Image (tube, rainbow, N blue to C red; front, side, top):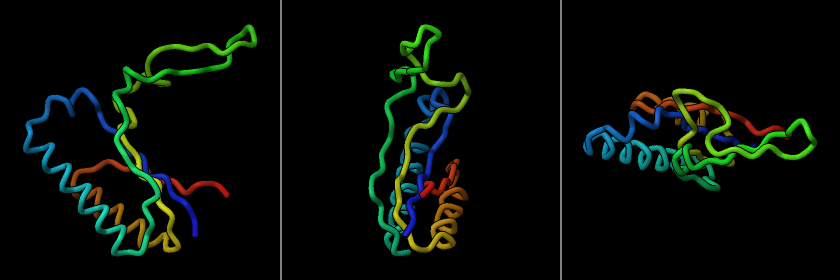
Length: 116
């Protein structure tokens, strides 16, 4: 068994402006993905949305040896990680296939196997 982190990057500002029908479509897509995980024998360890990136706190090493703490996301990009899935699976090919089906429904996914 290996663990996989499935990151969900998205443009936060655009998401807030979408009509409720698009939010409902996204919710149905996530429900289907979770059903696909169960059907494929993958164990969903934890999943969830993240608070808005404007509520993030970034911490970096400072020049004085102390932590430099700033409000906001680590990087200034159009897309931020808005959610994630942590999955335990013994069948990477099937898990990738489930992720590809998820992506065809309009989801942007970054699929990462955790280092052992």
